[in-house]
Length: 272
Image (cartoon, rainbow, N blue to C red):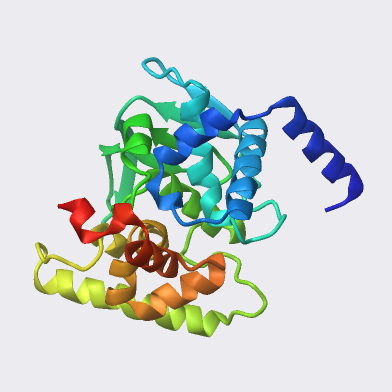
């Protein structure tokens, strides 16, 4: 980071301090941050402030966000970037549009005979190429735990995917990663899910069957699981977990296992 960029960063942080009590309330609402060390949480706190200053939150009627709610969203958005350095990973968009609940989105598809069909589908989130991220606030609040669901991470994974152009399930990989390894892990798991669903459309797949829609959704859904249900993802598709571990440069499974072994709130008796 150049000196001028660092000066602007520090000025932004000085002008927008986050009180300790406010940050603690945010952490209490986001169990998926449990186990991060002090340095990681300090980075996340600063990164959340910078995110909120860089991105405009447009709230639609029925949504009024206070400082705690804004930080709740920003902390989830920044978690995937925790170990990725100072590159502008969320470049290319400037706005997040917040609906109060699921919304109708115009959709179109072309069938095998070439006829185009149009319809409205109910969505909780969307990410537009070179456009905004759209989120249902009810969906944002439903995430935050180790529950295999996080709308913010899902939609921002699409934005990472789009750094190479249209979303196709292949974000820009690091120099120490190989596209062939990524493709082998992702395609193998994607094909496995589709085989199960072709045989039985109601099959109880190990991860959300929405991942089988297309490679872009597979990356977004597995990114959700990587951060919010790493044990389930690793058990089902260890090669996918390994590639996401290399990409995000984090190991949420190790963090979760440590919590389960040492943190009182994660002991079996605490859950009973």
